[in-house]
Length: 378
Picture 1 (cartoon, helix red, strand yellow):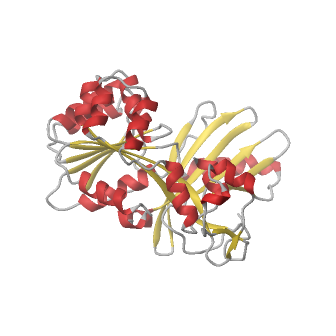
Picture 2 (cartoon, one colour):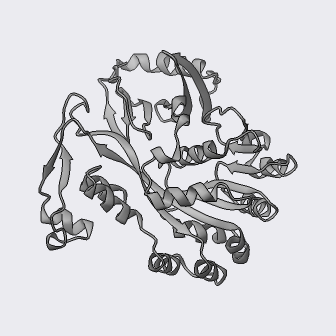
């Protein structure tokens, strides 16, 4: 395989490999910091041996090619232990394999290293120390939700706290935390694990994802009976997570009573500091961003010119964009009244919530990223 440059990267680095068989060729691609690249393809006749080898390494059934499978590879690279989560998918021309590389050193993150605005950092730091309630992190797949929740868990992972997690799959092994993997094939679902958790006398619980009404109801029950629950949802913004819980079938007054806050986030690429340079953006880009040139004053914009350090991309590493919905009394009243998402969002903005786009503007003005990246993810 093509060797990737060994460099020190910021917190939200991800690396994913894609092995894709087609009728005439066999493609190998990789995604670094959200951007997808293609390697020179190997000969097509090597597709089956490569895929079979990956399945053997990840303890999959190589004789079964009709259904999707999941596996795991653990390798020691230097002084690091790296987990690789492997997924197979039967396609028209063979099995497609996706290999997601998880560097366990990332679990050493702290909340203060995630690039959050100070107000959001302080709020989360206080919220995860509360004795009960639900705190939700929301966003699309690959937005860094798990990284944020692990960083929050690290802040409260002390000898006097009983911490339990239910995950699909368990992404990192963390000392001091009891972690349970989900196995839906044998009936070990989030909701079933969560019921068992309540008999384990925990202080705080992490549920990998609230997927259905049963899980949502048990999470609310746990929050209302003296437990702090951390979890994730897949929604476009923070107010959308509130209405998503109600759409699942949970009673609005229970959501209002148990939910402490919702953090929406995205990941975008950061400008390479070795080739960063100022430039003047065109008016069309500024219009898409929702600002005009006369409003900018003396603000400066930056881009990456491309260098050997960033492999000529102009970007190196990723950072988060954040939007925090604080469940204040006016917001709780709207939730109880089944107000639509747009009304909740408008009220939250009136009360001081900064949207993902506004946090993107902050990162642009601070020279962390480009206009194109913010427009792509907000």
